[in-house]
Length: 192
Image 1: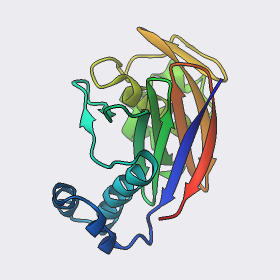
Image 2 (image 1 turned 120 degrees about the horizontal axis):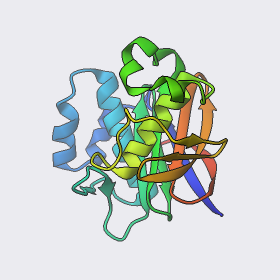
Image 3 (image 1 turned 90 degrees about the vertical axis):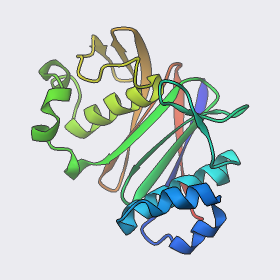
């Protein structure tokens, strides 16, 4: 069974001067963000990729999924102040993280069918599970509005496929990692 590595970075005090470590095109992208928090999330995600994957510049498949030539499978997510990077050899993988308090049923009701809400312990975990699968499959291959066919403690089945998943928590945040094969998850806190 593969062990996926989940890297977690807190960007709350990340100095924006570290943008000097990015390429000119990445710096331009970062400066498009108006809010300092959003700039820190972008900067943190790129620096984390650079540290863990060896590169912060990646391409995107037609379905929107990022990839590195000759690199491992990976997925990124962020919710201030955290950036999460999931890395594994199995393909595909996906990750999502959200602050539990920010996930409100009134805003997400159309994406979370009642049949799914009854089978997952909390709304944040369900939302993150749907988002992580969407990231792993790509935008054209998963309908987050469709109900799951079956949910067990570590696997979910839906029209067109299935994924194994793990739900992790960190100080009021829920993190869901998914993979097409069974896995264990190792959470690694990173300092830059």
